Each structure stands twice: as structure tokens, then as C-alpha cells.
Length: 78
Image 1: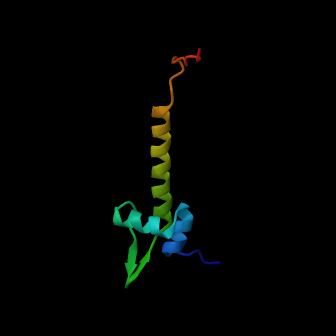
Image 2: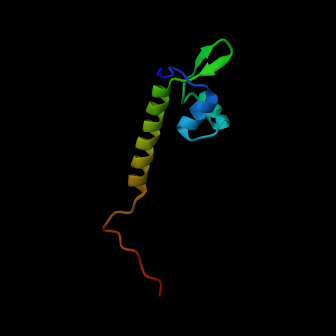
Image 3: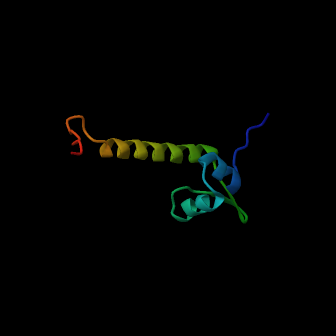
């Protein structure tokens, strides 16, 4: 069976677990880059995976930064 080389906006949104509207906002913001064939916008699934991985890395780094350190003690309410 042949694997699809490019996917449409709806399929890209599904792969990213976002709405098609949010996918188009990511295009507008320059986060993801479509391939234009005539008037159609198509997306490389590998590029979408790379973008998703970058967001995961950023999210993990941010949550580590925001996590309280082990030597910080929470005060109990009186």
C-alpha cells in the first residue's frame, strides 16, 4: 500500500490534534509550512511530526522550569 506523501488541512489538523482553524493559524504565524499545489495547501507529515516534537520539547523544558525545587517547603495553613 502506498503511503501518502502530503496531507490536506483536515488531515494535518488530525495529526497535530488541533482544529483545522488552528492549523491555518499555525500556517499564518509561520510555525508550519505548507506545500502549495495550485490553490491547495498540503502538508508534509514528517514536517508536522518535527513541529510537534519541538512543541513537546518546549513544553517539557517549560514545565521543568516551573516545577518547584525539592528544597522548597510548603507552609501548612494554621
